[in-house]
Amino acid sequence: MTVRVGVITFPGSLDDVDAQRAIRFAGAEPVALWHGAHDLEGVDALVLPGGFSYGDYLRAGAIAAHSPIMAEVKDAAAAGMPVLGICNGFQMLVEAHLLPGGLIRNAHQQFIRRDQRLRVENASTAWTSGFETGQEITIPLKNGDGGYICSAETLARIEGDGLVAFRYVGVNPNGSLDDIAGVANERGNVVGLMPHPEHAVEPGFGPDTADAMRSGVDGLTFFTSAVAAVVASAA
Image (cartoon, rainbow, N blue to C red; front, side, top):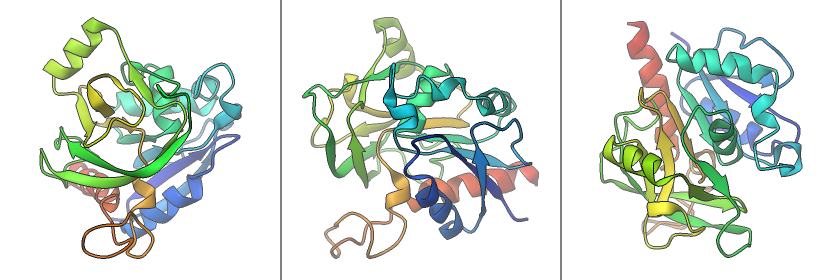
């Protein structure tokens, strides 16, 4: 089967085309979706890409979380469809209450970009099954509002229930609680993270690694994992 993955473009999205390209590298068909529509066009999975939707007014992702298509995104997520929120997309998912917690301005009050080491904490989600728990990967990071926050009760719950998907390694770039870089929902079909896996899918254009300059392709596993999850669910 050909897996179709929708990428939603919001006003101010920057990385939607990059996400579509990553989906092609994973062997799936990207489907461009518009935030103002009420039609997911029969896709099998969804990506909410990075950028600065609505100029980050109010709070990053706050306005986009109320876009018309988000009603369909919520229904699809509730039905078990794999949904990935990257950076601004992660901010949308927490603002839409599809994931716990919130994202605030980086602790140092500055935009940051770097090749960021992460540890995979949960390898049982639709977007992480191709990894091993405890595996360290390198993914590009670029954000100004990436500080993950939540209440003490929520933190205890997500830590206790294994909902932390990724954790920063080496340096906490934005002051996130418990070095949290990404989280998942209880079902494991919805994942959000601040780093950008779509920028680490092709040799020569990813993060620098010990093997060779700009050879990092750890991000591709996010998308191949989702494709495999869709195929398995259809079998």
